[in-house]
Structures are given as structure tokens and as C-alpha cells.
Image (cartoon, rainbow, N blue to C red):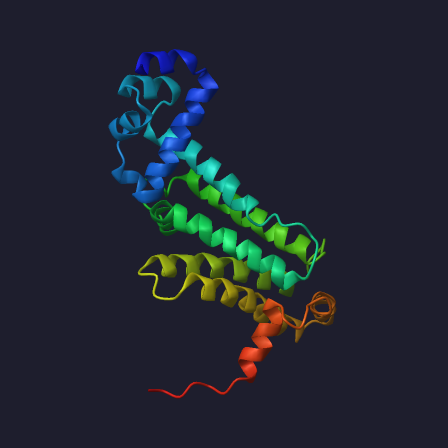
Length: 232
């Protein structure tokens, strides 16, 4: 049966299968802890056949990384319709879905390691950050960002990464709260920048003018108006 499956799969189909298998294994364990033998067993093929399609684990890891990076970068691609706060909340929900599905691999990649720290891997991660940055500028309808806007957006992307890593370490805060908190953090970061730059303030006012009274950004105002909880 296994040989029959092998004959029916073309080169690209087999490569796609191995990448999918590797993504699943790397998502649940550190890439350095996953062996070629395990990848072969999970794919239902022999170890030598894995090497027929990929020279080694590093090349397979990088192919899986590129696939994960494409998926991760695509999470920020949201139709430019409706209020900004609701769009960002949907983006954050997809982002945490990804983090939850690829938790260990995501953490190993962002924190570095012998395999994850390769130049190719770092370049792929930087590409994801650039794609996320460009998508966020598109959400704001800005083509040529001022320095303060660039700083705010890049800082927010770094904050989202750090928040996801901390959440994976024990999941001590409900992810739904963190998703909303990151939307609020975006508003806060851009709001601080707007206080120093009139062009930035104009961009922020335009975005906020479309926000409904019951939207995620209005929720931030409601929370700030509540009395601070008393220490127990």
C-alpha cells in the first residue's frame, strides 16, 4: 500500500507532503529535536527518500519555514473595509490561531537556536515583519509613512511577537483579552506619536472617525473610564 501511494505522488506532491509533515512536527517540538527518521516515518516513506527531495534537515526546515512565513504574513491581509479596530481584531484572532497551532516552532524561531538561527531563517522572519509592516500601512491608507508612524507600527509588530511568546509560556492571560489588548496597544502607540506629529494625528483622526460606539477601540475608552480595581 505504501509503495502504491509513493508511485501515485509526483515530485511536487511529495515535496508538499514533506513540508506539511515537517511543519506539524516543528510546530510541536523544537526543530533541533526533530530527526529525519521521524519526518520519514510521519510521511510514510523511507529516510533515503526524504534525502531524494531535500538535501538535509536544514533545507527541509527552511522550506517549511518559508511556507509558515507565507501563512503568517498573509494573516495581516484583511479587506480594507469597515472600522480599523474591527479589522485589527480579526487579524489578531488569526495571528493567535497561528501561534497556537505552531506554538513550539514559533517560539523556537523567534527566540533563536542552532537551526532557527541560520541566516536564511533570519531573512525569512525579517520578510514576515516587513510584510506585516506594509499591510499595517495599507490599513492606515498611508503610502509614505513619517518616521514616527514607522516607529509606532514597527514597535507594535514587535509587541505582538513578544506578547505571543509570553502567552505561550503558561497561557496565564486569556488569549481573547490579549487580542483585544493588542488592538488597544496599537491605538495607544499611534496616539502617542500623533501627539508629536500633526500628520500622524490627521491619519489617526481619520481612522477613529469610522469607529462605531461599540467597536474595539471604543471599548478602550470605556475601560479607561472605569474605576481602577482595588487590590485584594
